[in-house]
Length: 253
Image 1: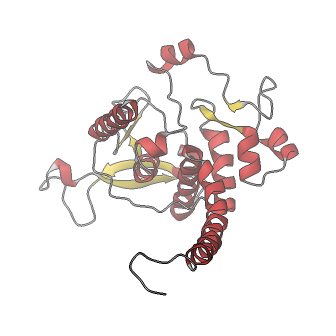
Image 2: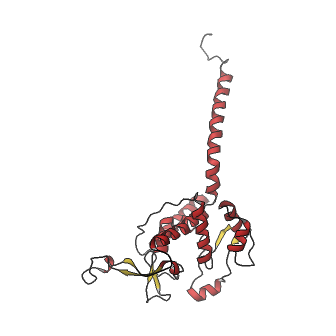
Image 3: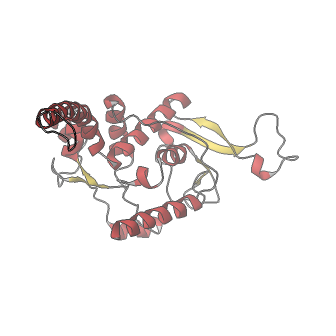
């Protein structure tokens, strides 16, 4: 019963989360948790741009190093910045909750299960959806999550976007809903295609973090299937051996 209640609660939370969205999520991606290079790049970007605020409480540095084939020395030297964190610790940060509430009004959420709760398409579109909005306290808004209280931490890579009308559409003659196309007005250090790839890598990493056991499960699955096949053949042969000398009632020898 408790499992059903938990599933219902997650469903309601997911519905509420999508209800907070500003625009429908039109982008769709297919994460590949077997792409170690992508996961390594995604972890690097996450640690450098996201972990300062958003923890991954249910993921350990050591587990990520083992799954993503990252040497321990490299992990400790390049991806664990705080001297208070050890190799086997969860992926925490030094941000104090009360300080975060004073800065942004609420503490940044833990993102370990975000890809499961909201979906990878939502995460991908959200990270690409920041645009300049002078009316907001932090100067930015988001097409997926209106009135977001988060700065665009990836702006140095992406550049600055604004909302505008598609080419050939007049803002005067068009409705405001149609003039919500993201337009890059100041480039960042990455080309648009390169930045989209970087966002994909971060999203792919979060998809892995939300269910890291899938990597090992996929590795074990073929062995389990082979075992079941061999066991099934042996069981069938054993059944035939047991029953060959047993006569059925009413059947003559």
